[in-house]
Image (cartoon, rainbow, N blue to C red; front, side, top):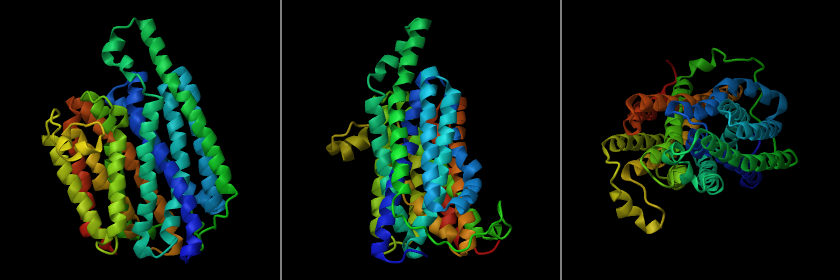
Length: 434
C-alpha cells in the first residue's frame, strides 16, 4: 500500500472524489435522456432502454482489456485516457443530435461507457487500498455521496436546459401536427442536446489536463500478473465470483431504479418526469450518509447489506400493490420539503435509492477479501464487468413492460435481484471454497 497516513491520502481522495462526481454526472444523465430520446426518436420502451444497454455493456466488453491497458499506462495515465475517451463520446452526440439518428446516439453512449470503464477500473481499487480494508466501505461511501450528488444535479440541469417547454412535444400535441411539422419539431428538440454535450466535452478535456498534471501518486498494488484474460486461480474464490453475481443484480436494480423512473412517471402523467432520477439519487445520498455514520462502528458491512436487500424486497412488493393515484405518503411525510409531490408508487421507486446506497460499498471489499495483490486487479475488473447488469436487466424490464403494457408490474423483476444480494450478505461472502 502506497498511502498509509491520513494527510497523505487527503489529496488522492480529493482528486478521486472529483472523478466520482464526474462518473455520476455522466451516468445519471441517462435517466433524463431515456424519456427525452423516446420522444425525439419515437421509440418504444424496449428501444428506449437500449440507452442503458449501449452504455453499460461497454463495461463488460472493455473491463478486462482496460485492466491490461492500466498495467501499461499506470492508474493515473489510465484515468487521463478514460476522460479523453469520454470527451470523444460526448462529441459524438453533436452529429447524433443534428441527424436525430438513434444509432449514433447509442454509439456515443457506448464510447462514454468505455471511458467510464477505464476510470472505474482504476478508481475503485485505488479507494480500497488507500487505507485500512475494514473501513473501505466508508471511503467508498464518501465517493458514493459525490457520485449520487452528481446524480441529483444532472437531471435538474438537463431538465432546465433541455426539457423546458416539453409539453409542446406531448403525444397529443405531436399527433395533431402534420408529418412535416412533426419532423421539424422533433429535429428542433433533438438539437437541444448539442450545446450541453459540447460543453461537457470541453470540461472533460480540462479535467483530463488537471489529473495529468496533478501530484496524484501511483498506488502500489504489488507486482501485476502479465497474463491476459481470467486465470483459473481467480475463479477459485467463491466470495469473489458470487460477489460478481451479486454486483450484477445490484447494478441492474440500481439502473432500473434510476433510469426507468422518468419514463414510468411520464406514463403516469407526472409533470416533472425529467427530474425524477434526482429523487432516486437524493435517497441514495441519504443512504450513503447513514452508512458513513454507522459502518463499521455500529453495523458491519454484511449487516448493512442484509438490511439493504430486505428493504429492496419490501419496496418491490409495495410498488406492485400501490395505487398510481395515491399521493398519501408524500403528503404525510415529505410535504414540508416544498418539493413537487409524486404518487406513492413513484416514491417507492425513488426509495430504491435508499435500499441500494450501501450495496456497492459493501460488496467490493467483501468480494476482494482474501485476494493477493496479483489477483486484485483482475478481481476488480471482474467486478466492473458485473456492471453489465445495468445493460441487461433494464432491457428485460422494458421488454416485460412492452409485453404486459404495465410498467408497474414489471418492477417485480427487482425481487430476485434483492434475494440473491440477501444470500450473499448472509452466506455467499463467507465462502472460501466451492
